[in-house]
Amino acid sequence: MIAHAITIFLSKGMGSFTMGKKNSLWIQKHRKDYYFRLAQQKSYRSRSAFKLLQIAKRHEFIKQGQKIVDLGAAPGGWLCIARNLVGDEGYVLGIDKTPIASFRMENVKTLEMDVNDEHVVDIILKKTKGKVDVLISDLSPAMSGTRSLDNARQTHLAEISFEISKKVLDSHGNFLVKIFDCPEGQQFFKKVKKCFKKTKFIKPEASKRRSAEVYIIGIDIIDPNKNSKSRTLI
Ligand SMILES: C[S@@+](CC[C@H](N)C(=O)[O-])C[C@H]1O[C@@H](n2cnc3c(N)ncnc32)[C@H](O)[C@@H]1O
Image 1 (cartoon, protein in one colour):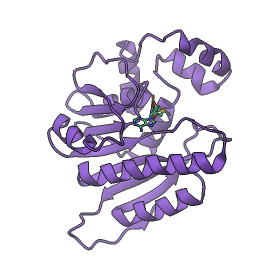
Image 2 (tube, rainbow, N blue to C red):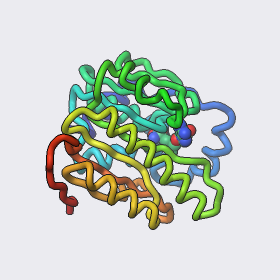
Image 3 (cartoon, rainbow, N blue to C red):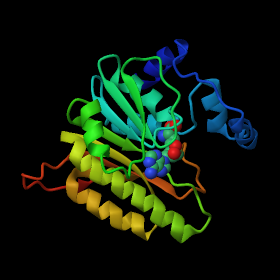
Image 4 (cartoon, rainbow, N blue to C red):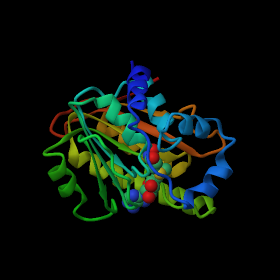
């Protein structure tokens, strides 16, 4: 069903956008990568689109008609996939500190904003006209090459995503966030586990094996007013 939705999406040319000159060197460097080539063939805005597609196919945590917030959304690969999963009746808001080329579909909106901005929650809730069903975050810092620093920066972005999710998710809302496989990531997982009924680490096939990135999925946020037990998915 997801594959069908994506096929319709692509046949309508909704995934296409114009790449700047700056990207051409990056394209040359990555042209041998399977998912990179596939993303080009399918006119996806990024190879990351396949990561969300694979996670969504397996966990079905985004449904038709839902409201989604996507943090770290540029250039928009995840936005394309999320839009297809929620369909015409849903709504997707993408936020990134770098500009995102606009989408033709009316129910995909983008915002150029740093997630550290103190007004980010208020602005999200205003744009989405209330609480949302799913928050997805593929936020990534610029890599320094120093593992400890990159781990700390990635964990910081995941923590911000988590804090935002607690304020914008409706009851039973779902959460997906990128983290690195490191001690800080394990500590972060423990915090997420306390707030969702089901949690799991995920390494989608499209995520490069040598990369430390993994995703944490949190299903069904625990209403802070209720005393509910959580469990880890297997
Ligand atoms: C891996 S990319 C996201 C790719 C995207 N999911 C897609 O499918 O096209 C990570 C993004 O996080 C963004 N980012 C990093 N730090 C940020 C911050 N503090 N506020 C907003 N965006 C940020 C970067 O600008 C970058 O576009």
